[in-house]
Length: 483
Ligand SMILES: [Zn+2]
Image 1 (cartoon, protein in one colour):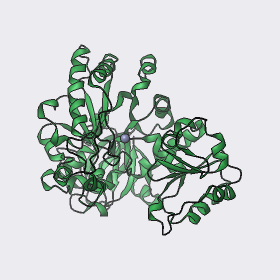
Image 2: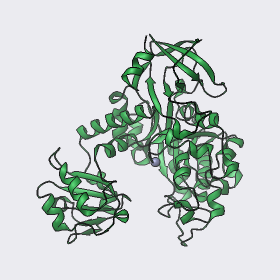
Image 3: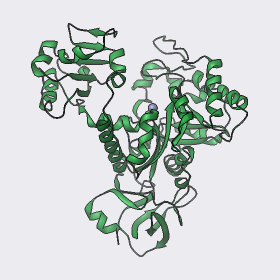
Image 4: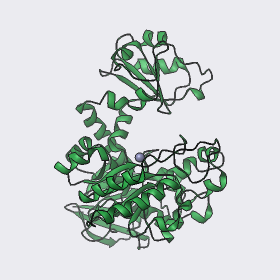
């Protein structure tokens, strides 16, 4: 048995913040909630649920060399060379940004070979579309790839985008990445995720990380395998209907400032057929749709497909991102059917005149992106997720409560609901979808301050509890909270 005390507790949607609360936990569940005379200055609430992230991928990224702080070709080589004898196989570095260097000259192939004579090296630029290679790496690239500049040791597009597919991580690397991802979740107060994974990676998750709850969404190409053998935590099938605003491939209703005219990735008839197949298999679709044309297509095609499939119990269609929702005809979506999984951190990172979205799209369209308030007013179910950019709910919530468009701001409890119980409900994780109360699974987070009356920047995760076990938190706090 464990007892957690907190100066403030928010039980979840519909409940008020209470002061001086003690929550007892027995066999992984809440066994009592009591008032006490004093408690440590922490804020207790249901743990976070990230409705959209790439769990294994973020662990793999964490496990490889981070080059995002390098400021010159020399420093890039030195940092990579410092770890060249740790581990074997391909040395993968991520995230250098030569546009921030004083001298943007890239290292030559000769420089790369001098620094790494033996081990294959692949250093990926921050954009994910270009990488620097040494000769050893060049030798093991499969023949016939486009975008390989052998003389300069530079590859673009195909070999970079398909790197993980061409050189799949070993089972050992995946295990390590999975544990690293769990560590990131625990440190961010997250105990459940909606994870976009391939079926082979999704299959091992439940056993590898017993302290996390998963809802996995696998690519359409895995559907046949899924029909044969479906782990219970695989809930749906992922479709890409468009790209991103940054790459000018999101199928927006408004025009791009550069004149780019991206098309939809799916033909509507083919999409309807594929979605019907998903419903018929007892699953539901999870559709990446950022621009208005893609969201409208997702809306209409899923309704048609569900009706065609004969109507299974899964009357659900998830739309991921839905950023340009305001420009979609109202009748294309049905709040009792379509559920919206959105990213407040995108608002914070990019939705401003002098940020990425402002540079790509007309301002009157940018202002209307990510209309959280309208989503709730129209009666849609709304869940928040980070998409790993960066991972961590606390880094994104200000995008919802301090939206640049005042009319689209939502309150602190509504934003927290979208990142906790409502995200759990959308992911089909029923036992985490209810407020803190008797018998609820004890997945809780303790924060350093009360977000109802302090700014997000002053709020940190102090401890994370999953199934009644402290999975993150300092030693001293462990003494404070356990009895
Ligand atoms: Zn994603």
